[in-house]
Amino acid sequence: MRRLLLPLALLVPAPALAHDSAKLSSEADQALECAMWAATVAGAIEDPELVTAFGYAMTYWIGRFEGMTGQHFDDFATEEYVNKLQPRFEDLRQRCAPEMEEMGGRMQNWGNRLQAAPSA
View 1 (cartoon, rainbow, N blue to C red):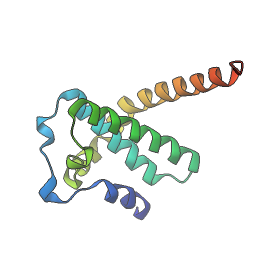
View 2: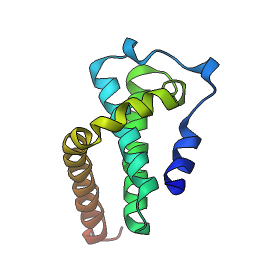
View 3: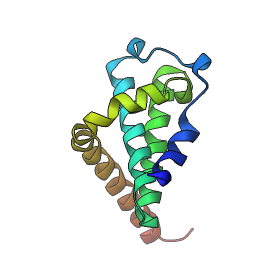
């Protein structure tokens, strides 16, 4: 559990800076939820390759969130917000994992195409 708290502690701003996530669009809120799910999973697993994969996924969703809102994710990802997600983690896994796998597959295919391309 201690390993889980360190990554999440990095995501939690001071309470005075927190914004109301209820004001987010559904799509932005879903991106933030998936980012926090990925951060939590990354903090709870031991396999270094999986930790890296979930870290990349977290960064992807944070980028989506910030791109959609123009806001910093850490102004919304409060301890209260993350704690409210805990009971829904299985639902989040079912929603977020396929998106993570799809993006990971696309990245892998892209890398393979670049490696196979003739050098200029």
